[in-house]
Length: 634
Image (cartoon, rainbow, N blue to C red; front, side, top):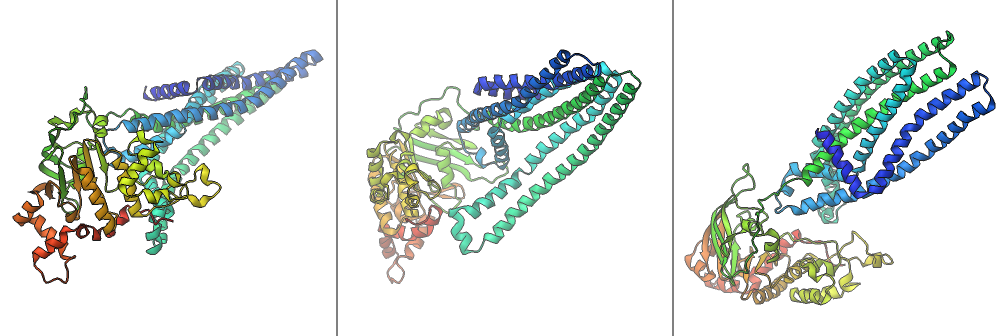
């Protein structure tokens, strides 16, 4: 029943996406089924008329019928091919929309970090790219079955026993076709990780982002070797299955040829004895060939449909997948933040096999205040950001928005209340204007709002000075219509400029309840970082903000600083309180300041004085810009 349900669903998808084309294709399929049988009977009638010395008029009727049937049989495949392509286009568009609509329904991002899910998603995309193949296979089954029935009936009129032998010889072919199709589908799933790695290496070899290190470190031969090794492994798996199919199909072809030869010999001897007419012999030959051709079509359709059904199963599994995170039955509207955000005994790990990232974190971010999170890499700072945005849920504990658990709120409405700059921000291959407007889609086409955000981020002059101003594509990967006359107009920004574009994107949401700034100045030089943090202090004033930075001089003015260490809050307080406590924060601050006070014989107080300037926090930022850099401005 499961394969039948899959065929019904795929056919229903085709009917909804292209009802007229599907109806016409079904009609063409049925007509194409009738013509081979009709041609066989008309051939028999023509030959019998010739042998019996019938009148010219008696011979002309089947001859004209043959001509008409032959003409229609020549035209129908062309019409069918066009309709098949049209169904594939329309159904492919509908299926792709359904697939990515389902992906967009996901609340979190956990599935996109699961290799097994990514393998299934790749096969689902493959099925969604050409779902018409399943429809064609389903219609092929119907066509093959009807053609087979017609020729079997014709053959049975001549000799029932020969018909039974021909059909019996086809049973192994059908069984093996189903078995091999399942093996092929299993093989495609098994080599999925290998093929994804191959694509990964190919992308590294052809990506401008990786080109600098690939060229500098001479990684081309190494990466190409790994890519080809994965390609060879996938080819080997395909080759093994192809050889198995070759052996099986060759054996079955020999069996079919033997049956056909034996049947033909019997027919000829029967005609010599006067038991059959010349037309009967022609009809028998055509019927045997038709039965075997129909069986071959049927076997191929079964194998193709079975394989496509297995791939379509991955598509339906993705489309039908429930929420990746629990969705509230009646989502609550997030209240305007008046009290604050609380992390109450929050524990988190990415799976049962992973270590704990957070181990009972208790934090309270008062509304209208700024909290800074500091700590070593991997201490859990960015994980807290993911939990606040509800990309994941805590494994234990809860996060409360003015006393309401985030799991009770509408995720979409919650995220509308949040503005953010992520450490691994996106650099979209769009125009400068669109890159900023993506922070709030209501700003698309609103140049005034876009430019205001760019001015706040200090990137307006750079973008306005581009060849096409804000309409310039920030990429060398694509061309806009206006660029086709001069392909040099696409521009790649520097890492620091991209950082400012990402900040401008976030500034479109400056009025939201919560602003998250995860390393907002990592790609900027010392002077630019000083400027940005001055702007940020003004924007954060009176607003609820979460600031994450490794440069401690940049967070010292936060209302509360929390040091995260080994997944727990190790220290918490203002900068002065933490310095007085003389704990890990104070040690890290002095260590960081020491590099800027090097050569000075002054005491720790002078180091702290040096650290009060924004440059203390920002000179080292250039070393962190590589992760966001997309090349220098051309």
